[in-house]
Image (cartoon, rainbow, N blue to C red):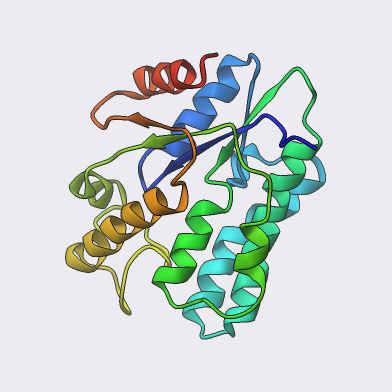
Length: 205
């Protein structure tokens, strides 16, 4: 069976994915933005609104890697189900899919258990749109670390050096994770409307 038609919106932390997905949701149309960001959850899936906070606490609290990755798999399963249940006339655009989760697990040493092999067995997207952002811009958007969760930097507390190094490693890991897929790059420095237009052009929508 052929893989379903869907795309992935990818980028490092604070690259603007949430803003672009929200803008696409406001516009309507064939593209179906999908994220586990709380404002985008509907129906029974609203129960996932606490997932990002729970993940940060689980990782920072020293819980087992299996437990942390099991929570991460809830997010991946939601995105997978969104693809499989999407109306045929729509094109789902997933927030990161499993790629960002997979790379963060590797960077943070969460490598035990069956989860990574399972994630890499999931359907391949039709393409990936990669949003770029300068690390200095991302640091500013993070409130100089005030908004960071523990899975966005190296070490016990965020500072500009630990954040920047993590984000650069994350970008390199993302590019490696999507090697062999069609990847469309959206450069940094555009406003939300222009970035959203660029994403749609990349998807040929």
